[in-house]
Length: 166
Image (cartoon, rainbow, N blue to C red):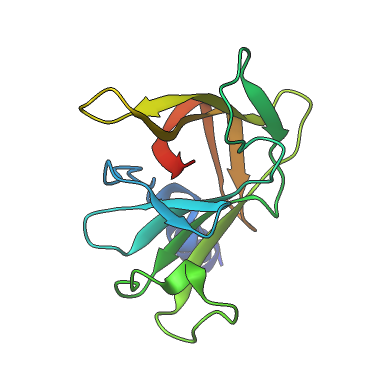
């Protein structure tokens, strides 16, 4: 009986996958992709991972800001997805999400009083020093992402920069 209990304990402990969680690399391409005015995302080099922000018009303004603007993180505006194959450049720009590639893991933002997206906006000039638009610098503060079994936390994550025209 002791041998059976020992074998069952070993099988039970060996089958536990809590230690098998693969930590996402968060090694994204430098270039931000933009859909419309308010969906901004970064992918890894294989286009199989994406960190997506859905921003609102209160933080993306075509005017220079003297203080950074904030949008609080929630499950609906910050998502990190891992796909079974590469996504296309228009994946997040479609009204209906495509059925392929398949999302194999999805983390969503966790709301909190200190969890926010910060956007700083400056004027953008061309090489002739002519004002042609605005540059938006995005940083995520106290970003927490969760799915059913895992959590990812960053105290400060520099998401990147994108420009909008006049």
